[in-house]
Length: 67
Image 1: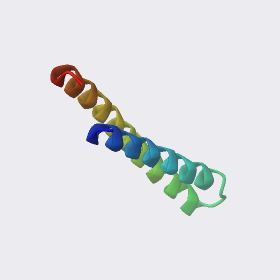
Image 2 (image 1 turned 30 degrees about the horizontal axis):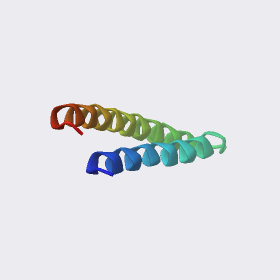
Image 3 (image 1 turned 60 degrees about the vertical axis):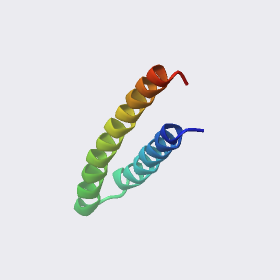
Image 4 (image 1 turned 90 degrees about the vertical axis):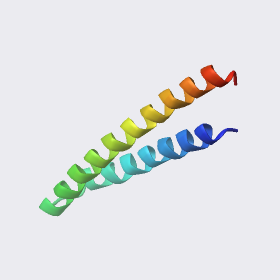
């Protein structure tokens, strides 16, 4: 397992955990929960972008290194 494989799995796990916390905050009543849900949504989008960049970098690395 390469470093890219581990980083991609960690990024996907972080997205899943953030999604879970965001869903919990979404169904919690109150203004503070709405604010937290919004923050978690922005964090999840950033983590998804990071995961996609890692996937692209990993595919590029494997294509150039012959792995």
